[in-house]
Image 1 (cartoon, rainbow, N blue to C red):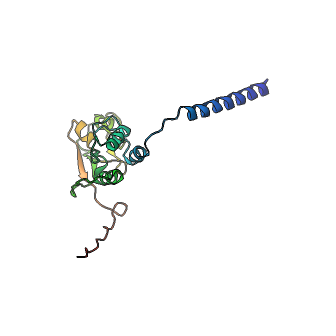
Image 2: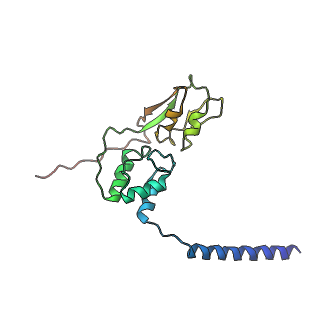
Image 3: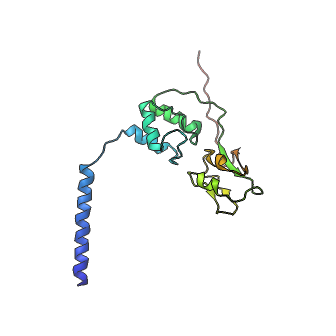
Length: 177
């Protein structure tokens, strides 16, 4: 009896797998590869700061020309330049765009949990009525948590370069006249 049940479920699994594979081929939706590439480099937090519901919709609007490549605040100027290069457009990006990270003043934090709920990147760790802290490697500096903090204990600070985040500047070539 056990062998019959095992054979039955193996055959059923194989038939359903074949049916799903055929359905995937039959109902395939072709998408723009440029939209897929732009979506892949966006942060993926679905924060909505660009005015769209998510990163996929923002990428579609960028390709259609309805959204500026620098519309993603968590991505910063590096992302804006990358998207503009992919789209073949030029944008003016301020050099003063410094990377930011959230900082929680522990002496003022009451554990209201609003910043934790507002962070779409899960960069804030804590529990209700407990002290919260920020995982700096995950924080994108989108400032949504700062807007949600009712205690005023959360601020955005500039990322200080260390051995892991500092890079040599690219050399500039002299222009031949």
